[in-house]
Image 1 (cartoon, rainbow over the protein chains, first blue to last red):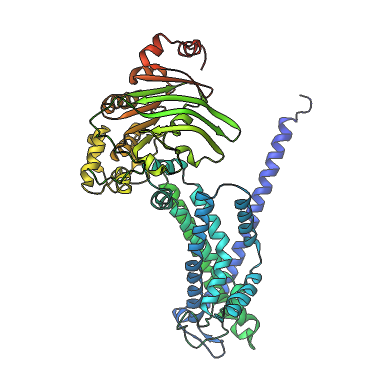
Image 2: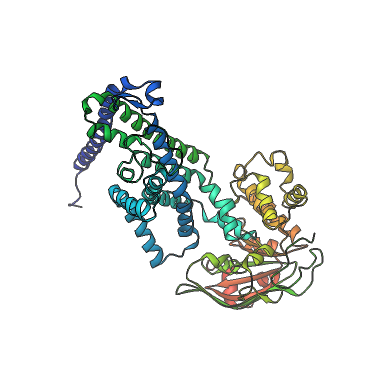
Amino acid sequence: MSRRRSARARRLTEVVAFSLFGAATVVGLFALGIILYYIISRGGGALSWEFLTAFPRKGMTAGGIYPALVGSLYLTAGAIVLALPLALGAAIFLVEYAREGPWVRAIRIGVNTLAGVPSIVFGLLGLALFVKALGIGVSVLAGSLTLGLLILPLLVRTAEEALRSVPRSFREGGLALGATRWRTIRTIVLPAALPGILTGIVLGLSRAIGETAPIMFTAAAFFTPRLPASPLDEVMALPYHIFVMATESPNAWKTKDLQYGAVLVLVGLVLVLNLGAILLRAHARRRKVW
Amino acid sequence: MNERSSFSLGVRAPQSSSCQVEPILRVSNLSLWYGKQQALRNVTLSFPVCRATAVIGPSGCGKSTLIRSLNRMNDLVPHLRIEGEVLFHGQDIYARDADPVEVRRRIGMVFQKPNPFPKSIYENVAFGLRVNGLKDHLDDRVENALRRAALWDEVKDYLRKKSGFDLSGGQQQRLCLARALAVEPEVLLMDEPCSALDPVATAKIEDLIQELKKDMTIVIVTHNMQQAARVSDETAFLLLGELVEFAPTEQLFTRPSDPRTEAYITGKFG
């Protein structure tokens, strides 16, 4: 009993801890607030309908970001389309079929490691594998494949979590009625896991749309006078366009407003996607009855 | 009636109305291990046709394990080892060429906790029918199953509007019962079907068991000895994975032959 600290001391610790954690939150939010304020105040002026729908003009010192915006959407959508079947298959295998053991553990470690690989490494891999070895060339397809690899672990993990959150009793109910495992998974487990999987897809989109390094060597063009006609064409992409305007343009200072405008659009897209994921999750939680 | 898939077990299902006397399901020297831990020890017993057989015993005695091994629901459990036979119409359901999916179609199950699917009431019942290719007269079959589970009158007005989860616990369990009955199993396994229900809902399920055993074989695991006495014709008493006594229910509860059974039913342990 003598070693027990007084109530006052404990209350003090509590107050200190509470303040520290609170302060951490405030600092984080503050940083986000400053960034947003900065981007909006500088880039807001550049925003216009023309900015979103016109090609760049006069060596990128005027005009809009239309081709980069559309290119980013192509690349990101392509990445999801290519990666999702693979991710879903892997998640279903890991959760539903594989028995816990060294192999499954190895796969899981592999997936987690993949998630930690720097994105420039994916870019170089994409260059070596898709662009050169497979001869796809610098194109929407090569960029989508590379981005797809990048978001694969994210998709696998969110799909895994979503599947795991479906109660075992649903599977038992299906099996007990004479359904095969696959039928049970397809008609009961997957629909129940769908909101979680969708959330993962939206997060994957938001991750892929902001990446520069993976598309730098595999898809992105400095400038294209028209939109890509096929998946084998080069494209412009928003993050790369910003990078180019800021570093490689001979008159970078003249493009400043456009840069901020493009950044604002990109950050806005990411925010909207993340907000979408949050809403999806909240909606699923409200509807979740089990 | 007869677009049921051909049975891989090679036996024809008996007409549901004609109940024979021979055991439909026989457990022979069944031992089961979860990893190193043995859950069933050399259990042998027969479940007679069109009777309700209760399996009783204290928690952890292996009664759930036993009932789940009667339709291979244990298949999903990792590190499970089984010895002995479970004979359904004389065929071992654990034989290499036995199809667990077919076994589960013919030996239905209702679980401890109601587990409706997150689908409409109608789809809950129709699921098993669709899976088993019983797609003609779907509406009739669904209605019939819900009637047999005494749920029809309570849900008929919102079959497609309400989810299985919108129902009360007792209704959910009767929905699960209807779902199981829809595919016309020959044997119905019930794993403590009333343990999550209130007394009124429990009484309803017990009445249904009386009704159902007229044309199907019922195995019910229960924690509740009064329930076993009320609903069953035969009772098996399990203790530590071992079958201690298997006798007509009345005899087991009034004149048990094993002192351990007597100790359990008089409340000395458990």
